[in-house]
Length: 184
Image (cartoon, rainbow, N blue to C red; front, side):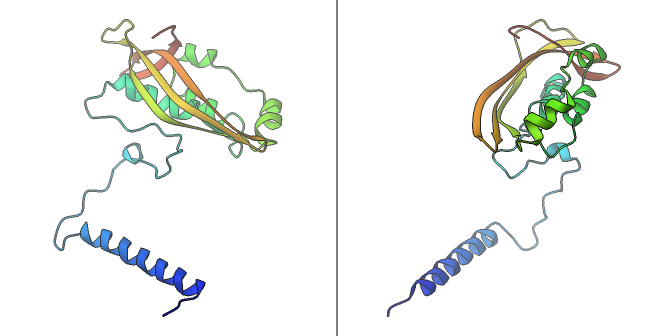
């Protein structure tokens, strides 16, 4: 029996649907409880492998590492569709007042010309966030964060390693990102 190109494509499509349904059904069990839904967006992982969100850590992770991860998720990526100053505003809210004041300010005209007009989008992936070998005590530690930053625009794409080493301090019961440190 001969099949035309349309028939072959339908057959492939039906096989794919059947395979997908089999995978879904194999993972389901009648009467089995569903896993609990996450109660916080901080524990949800996005589907995209090029996401700018750092992977969620473990329950025994140092809270300073969690603080730096949240800060890095705001500071490393950018998106031309976001309003000027958005990423800086979010990042500064996770920093000490001295570190927030030292954070570079993006000029609105530069943002428009170099980011918006070129449709520039930076995503960060392959995250590593960890305590570094710097000094530690109960209210201050050093944390190192690295990611692969990919910048895409109308003119192409490029990737580079993004790295920050930061002092993180416990202030009023909250870990805040503080000054940049050299070498962890």
